Image 1 (cartoon, rainbow, N blue to C red):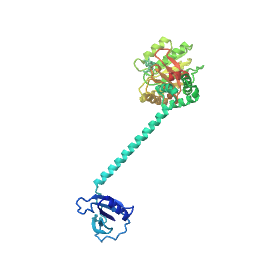
Image 2: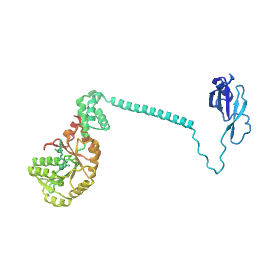
Image 3: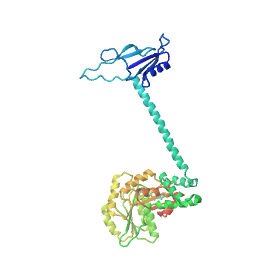
Image 4: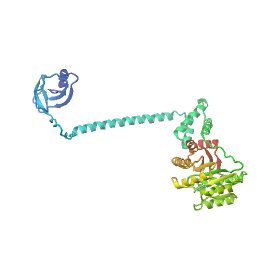
Length: 398
Ligand SMILES: Nc1nc2c(ncn2[C@@H]2O[C@H](COP(=O)(O)OP(=O)(O)OP(=O)(O)O)[C@@H](O)[C@H]2O)c(=O)[nH]1
Ligand SMILES: [Mg+2]
């Protein structure tokens, strides 16, 4: 049932509605009556109340609903008006398509938009709270740790690793004995404990130790082999040989031949994996054999197959992936994934002298569970070091 109330003012109309219908009345519409001559009927309020006790409306035709019009004096309707409703569709006839009420649609869209705006504001507020939280955490790092934190972050270590390291060092350096020197020393120890180093290679009698080197183009594989061969010769182990499988690329073979001739080192060329047994038979009295491979761009499946075939034929004691330390972290990850699948079990970083970030020396061996063996730190023949925890820790806090 719908009722209309006319009164001089809205306040008056609301007062009457409240008195007569109580708090459950629902206002459907309120409007000013512009052309009303009656000063007591300047406004009209339409309300509904499901269970209003009222006389039933005069009978109307099917599909018609009655609207009671009230005057400003009483509760009895002075007039009943028909509200046309569309007649029910005959049975078995498809209902007419629903007509879109544009006003309602706009209302609906506006309220949805308002809700979205509110959600956006809430999200922005939550995000600010979160960032504020992060800032507070950072600000809580005691100022004595600022310098070491900056160094570790600059070295490319993730925030998570840096936080773990700081937490450990804060425990080891009590608040009353914190100075830059002791913090640095404790940090070096914490770093060294985490750096993963491969066991030193052991030469043995009766069979050569075989080290194979793989890695991206120009990463420094041949350079590392020259340095290791030169180092072995200088340190009293002239019984070293090089096998190169990089026989087809222009200049690659000549470069290795020139080095082997100058250093008086045996060089064998393996054009295919089938030649490997014969070559290693000839080298059986050597104590160390270093195997060079061709560098190819990442994703070259043919190359990966070739490396695999040579690996299976040679069955090296150590498979070193050679990576330049100045490579971007994302590329280092991609390369290591590929070479780990090719059974790399050692990592060599080259170009340490050119790298502005050295954090990969710590995170990459941990992430891929492949320990570090050597580090190349320059183009000279002596620029190679066996990986040492303390040396790397020193570089990281430099
Ligand atoms: N600065 C610096 N340069 C290096 C280092 N190691 C290698 N290089 C240089 O990197 C370049 C490539 O070195 P190679 O040893 O030929 O690299 P490779 O992996 O054998 O290359 P491909 O056989 O072509 O895949 C050369 O110019 C080297 O001098 C290093 O530790 N520091
Ligand atoms: Mg090479």
